[in-house]
Image: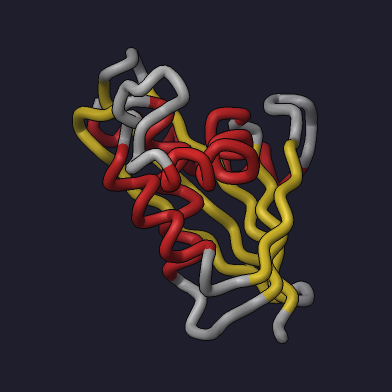
Length: 144
């Protein structure tokens, strides 16, 4: 099984507002970056989209370590997702899960791979996190 490091970030000017997402896939030193804009979105949607697009780029099941500075994505995927599904995509307070279609898409993609989550402190000098942050900001600024 291929070992992949996936670095992700999202950016938004205003919340909602114009946004961008970016990810970097690293497989044994071979890297690929992906990025895209959204004219009207939220930061959380861009953070989720970065992970989704990175996982969509994988052609086969892999062991994926996902590096993110988003507690929303990490905590949602690693801690809350199973409960949301059991409750029919409702949170513990019985309210619907925000960004439902993205969470459902992410859930389907996560099930194809062996996943490990790593939280990275944003804007703290982590080279890959800084790169995907810059790429996401370029995309955000392209539609701002």
